[in-house]
Length: 164
Image 1: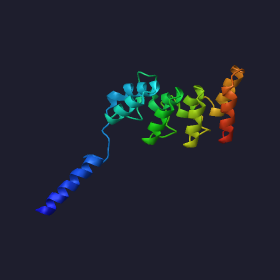
Image 2: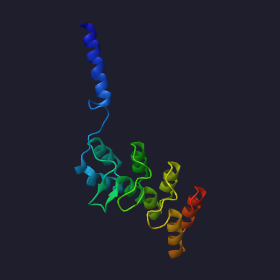
Image 3: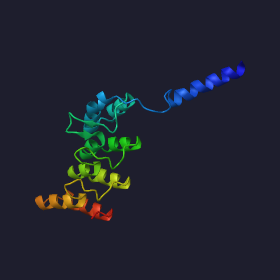
């Protein structure tokens, strides 16, 4: 009888740590729009709360231009949210239905710190989603706004990372 109690206590402790469903999260697609909006806003506490409630970390928000939390956080420069999402297992090279990636979002937003982080996490610097490679796109933007200091810096970062 004593062994059953010991095993029962151990089971309860383990279940409390990993959850009764074997570490699988229950996904609630209804939270996707809120989750992506919180990522865009950089509201890390809300992102964590919605994640805990079952938000799909890979889900696309129809209310937010078919983007994902990672792409929108990267575009808006919310580096702490980007780190959280990557730590939770979002693929750094995740593509939206429109073929955007976090790297393309960060580049478009001129977010050098996020670009560096994504490259460090092995973002594909040569992915062409139909609009050219990241380097080709940034070089085009640099021609359109030659007084910007952001574009030359991003070009240098991409080239150092092996972009073509």
